[in-house]
Length: 173
Image (tube, rainbow, N blue to C red; front, side, top):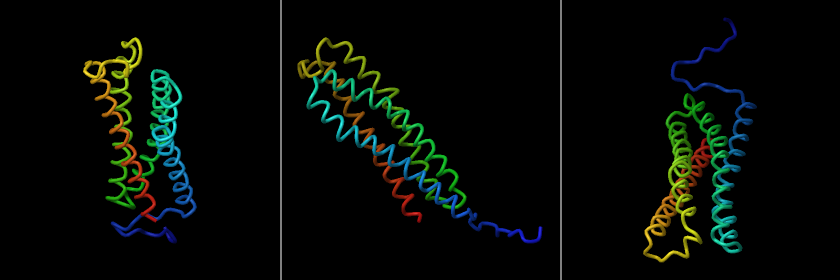
């Protein structure tokens, strides 16, 4: 037992510097890929698709992109969540808050893809042309627009939670 440091009760755990740096680089990469992909779809791909393709095709492309992003969310968000959970003994409340934010972001993405997107897809499939061709008072159009607003707001929440968690990671240095 000689030579082994004994940690005081309540003292932070010491981790090797190289390991911490590697985890932090991985974490930042995961945030960049995950949140950057969502930003790219929302602010670049979706406006371009709807500006240059018929609404039905543009919606199908963006819908497929968001379904793929869900897998990316599970991978990146899941790994980030594991990283934050591992930091709880060291960072305490900050790590718990960040883990909850990441879990909320992943859960919100699942809510959109599991609940809202299938209902939107069903409405689109039931309409012979595009949603925009329906009269403004049509119940299918109103329902689709309400679901689309909820979806957009939910993805906004994902971005906010993700960026706040990333900021907490940067602030912990």
